[in-house]
Image (cartoon, rainbow, N blue to C red; front, side, top):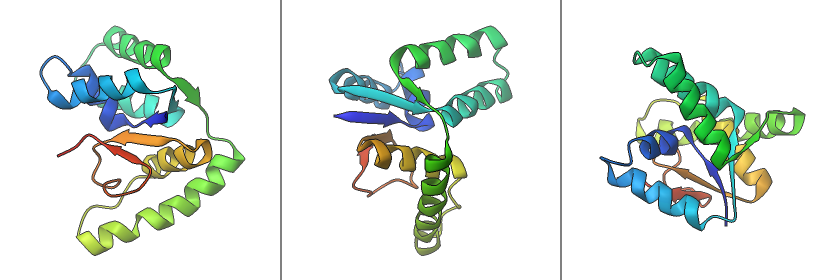
Length: 138
């Protein structure tokens, strides 16, 4: 199975020693035939840890770990167009379930998964119930 690993899943993986979700992510990655990560996920990871006060070296180490595990997929014209369509689809769910709107990064992750015929590994509630998802959330 090919997988696209969302920011949520990477954060859980970094916390593997203390969280069961991280261990689940590790198991999914180990079983995958190919692992991918959208480039925007790298930026989200960096933002999260810098915002929490992590030093740059720690952030760089985590980003290097990600790139050692998964192949980076960049946004190109095809991804951009499909992401726009996917975003319009994703915003319908929060309206129905009274959730916050998804971010554009969510749409990019799902668009890339669809393009690659892969599954998204995540626990982000914006993805819950989608056929393309390997759910690690609660």
